[in-house]
View 1 (cartoon, one colour):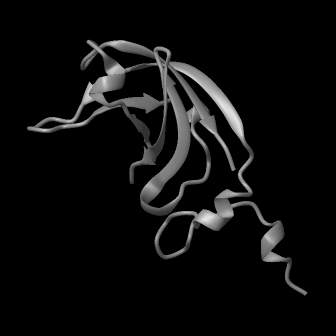
View 2 (cartoon, rainbow, N blue to C red):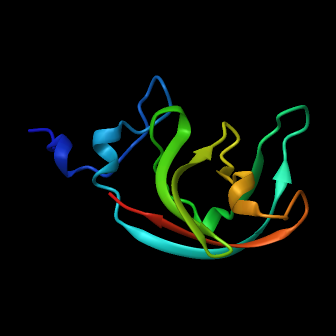
Length: 116
């Protein structure tokens, strides 16, 4: 008899390379802290991101590579998602209101709270 699908750890969807949202509920909750150097995607309206170190990133990802989190950057907390690129790198988008005067190349202190 095959094992129950409810006892497996989250695995990416074979066709779309993401873990379905209902499987993310089995991902353990955890909090991680790190420092990150902000970078901005080039071009008008480019977003600013804080890369998440590989040892601080969750192993599963949701639709479109997004993982819901509570983020705190330099003491400002908000609900957002981290994004997993096709390359595997995980990025935290940091809005201007949260960054304050910090821009591309500045170092920020980050706390991410992942919850199931």
